[in-house]
Image (tube, rainbow, N blue to C red; front, side, top):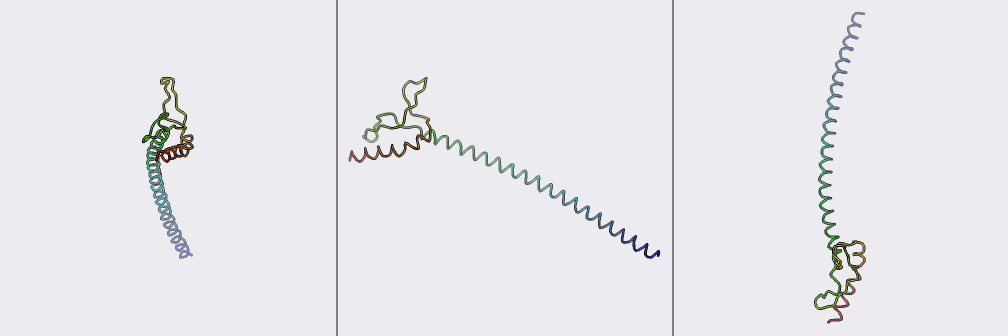
Length: 128
């Protein structure tokens, strides 16, 4: 019986050693996962910052384009000797009573592009 007790004690010691080893492996895996999570979070934040920077630059470019689209020539301006009358409505400010073309609604400007091109092309065709 004492031999059986020794075998049981040996088995218990081996199981304890295996359990300790597995606990150490689980702790190491948890620490590794935490490091990877922190690195992933850092990378996501970096990518987000870069994206926001690019998005801001694109937004500024789009705003500049929108302001240029809204800048139509003044009424009855001549282009290459052709009388040109824009169809867009002028912007009048309280400080400047003279109508001025400047920033406008880009949707309206986009809708007016075809009309403006038609007038310009008809003017060029009639002058030739």
